[in-house]
Structure formats: structure tokens, C-alpha cells
Length: 368
Ligand SMILES: Cc1cc2nc3c(=O)[nH]c(=O)nc-3n(C[C@H](O)[C@H](O)[C@H](O)COP(=O)(O)OP(=O)(O)OC[C@H]3O[C@@H](n4cnc5c(N)ncnc54)[C@H](O)[C@@H]3O)c2cc1C
Image: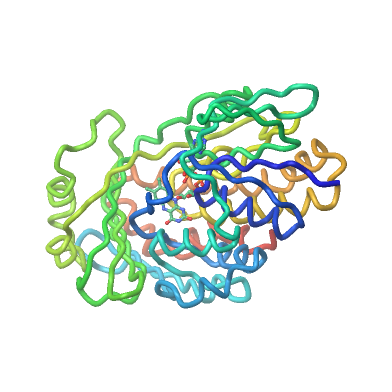
């Protein structure tokens, strides 16, 4: 039986789902509302379980030459003194490499995985379930029927809304500042400088570039008009590599983060993957890994029981939900420590930081 499958969204989750489905023997259509020329900016950190999932999807080889491998995560106090360090190579030994790279490069790898077959500038406006099938209305005016629709349309998912799986995403109150710096200070480790309700993370991402990710908890504050000045204001007095990085920062992008928690991820022949189903704040850098794993598991479950789509979707959710809930819970735990004053938090992190932070990833070392 040839299933008519539509993947909505060609971000990380959509391309991973399309790849997972192709590996399982299906040929999904993929649509994306944005034009093909919109390449994602910034960098991305992929911990070991992301590499493992890309290997399952058969995409580890094109990834290998890209970005920089990360062997250690170093955590510093605001004066640049070490709190603790994590041996990430040991943490993910036997699972996969941890890597920082440009999002545009990752997108290219994922695109090759679907043979570049994406219909750009094609937005899904509506989806309805009619006699067990999904009737989809596109921005082009076309209407088509599918046996399965995969909503990979992000935190503000239209599919989630139309199909009644859940309302808007919940803001976490974090403002994130991202930048890529060329020719900054020499940096070999993923390095975080922890302030109160604010942190600055920098990591090498290949090509002598540094990917910077800084955030502050500011639920009531509007986004700053001058993000570069705001970074200087919050982090200007920080130690470690921060002063040398701030000196070279040029373009800064600003984003807000959200959380999505749903009672169920599918209805009839429509299912959600990636941020549309389970977005969290990116504190653990697990969004891409969870999306890759979603794509792999969805493809495998459908392959095993393709005559019974709702059954396959239930099996997909049963396998994925506990893991994504772990990521959400650990993310919340980690983010709660942001409110603790550094005078209390830092001595605790010096003593127990390694154990606590290692524990946050332990469950994810287990196979998908
Ligand atoms: C600031 C920040 C930093 C992060 N850093 C990391 C990190 O270092 N490591 C990590 O693993 N994760 C990180 N994440 C999380 C990670 O980026 C996401 O979890 C991951 O990209 C999965 O997103 P997605 O594909 O589900 O959604 P999106 O990236 O939002 O993609 C959805 C796609 O669907 C398209 N679309 C939307 N609606 C429609 C429609 N109706 N019709 C057609 N197309 C549509 C959109 O244009 C978009 O291309 C970060 C997130 C943020 C916000």
C-alpha cells in the first residue's frame, strides 16, 4: 500500500521526519511556507544523542566534516573562575560525537536526506479530518487529500491549532541573543559563564568562528531596541572569554523561547513532531536531537504497521513521550537554578555541578 503523506514544515523536525519516512520506504511530500532562499542564521550545538539519531537516519557521513567537535563543557562564574567541567566525550562515549556547527550547514545535510524535494512558498492554511483522511488546503488555493499529515510546523503550529491538539505555546520568559563571531579569542571548549538569571555561552563552530548564545530571564520586558548594547550592559563586567568576544560581536539576533506541552500528539491521520509537539527552552540543546529521534521513530513505527496509521501514531507517541518529558523536566530543573543567587549557587555547583549536570543527560544516553 502506498501511503499519501504530507510533511508540513521544512525546518529541522520536518526534514528529519521526511528523511525518517524515506528510510522506512515512504515518499512524503514536504511543504514549507518560506522561500528556499531563507537560510537559517546562527549556530547550533548537537550533543551525542543528536549524532546517534543522524546516524540512524543515514546522515552522519555528510555531517562529519562540518563544524567543530566539542569535547568539554566548562562552566565559569561571572569572574571567569571555573565552577566545574564536564567531559562530554566521556558522557556520550559509544553514543556519538558532540558538535557545534552552522544551522545553514545542518539544513543542507538534512535537505540532501530528502533529495532536495521541498515545495517552498507553500503554506498549509487548513487541515480537516474527513472520513479518516486529512483534507489539506494550501496557500496556493490547491486542496489535496492525504492518508497522513505530519505537523512539523514549529512552536506556533497551525496544524496543532486546526486539529484541536492544543493552544498557543507558553512563553518561558527568556530572551535569547545569538551571534556568530569571526576571529574572536582562541576557544576550544563549549564555555558558559553563569550570572544570575543570565548566562553567556560560547563555543567554537568551525572556520575559526565562535557561536554565541546568551540569555536573560525577563518575562515582562520588551525585546531591547539595541541588542548589542544590551549584551554589553548585562555581560560587560563578566570574565573568562566574554570581554574579548563582546569586543568583536557585530550582528545580534533576538528570540523568545516557548514551551509546548500537549495531552496528545495525534488525532486520526494527523500527528505532530518536533517543536510543534514538545518545544522547550533550549537550555539542554536537545531540540534538534528530539526532532531527529522523532523522525526516526515515526518512520519505523509506520513501516511496521502501515495498514493501521492511528495505531502507528500511538506507538510513536508512546515511545517518544517519556523521553521528551525527561528533556522538559530537566530543562525546567536547570532553569530554576537561574533564580538562585550566585553566592549560594556557585559553591553548590563547585561541589556538585558535575554530578547534577551529568544526571541531566543520563537518561538520554539510553538507546532511542
Ligand atoms: C534560541 C534558540 C536556540 C536553540 N539552540 C539549540 C541548540 O543549540 N541545539 C538544539 O538541539 N536545539 C536548539 N534549539 C531548538 C531547535 O532549534 C528546535 O527544537 C528545532 O529546530 C526543531 O524545530 P522545528 O523544526 O520543530 O520547528 P521550526 O524550526 O520552527 O520549523 C518549522 C518550519 O515550519 C514552517 N511552517 C510553519 N507553519 C507552516 C505552514 N502552515 N505551512 C508550511 N510551513 C510552515 C516554518 O516556516 C519553519 O520552517 C534552539 C531553539 C531556540 C529558539
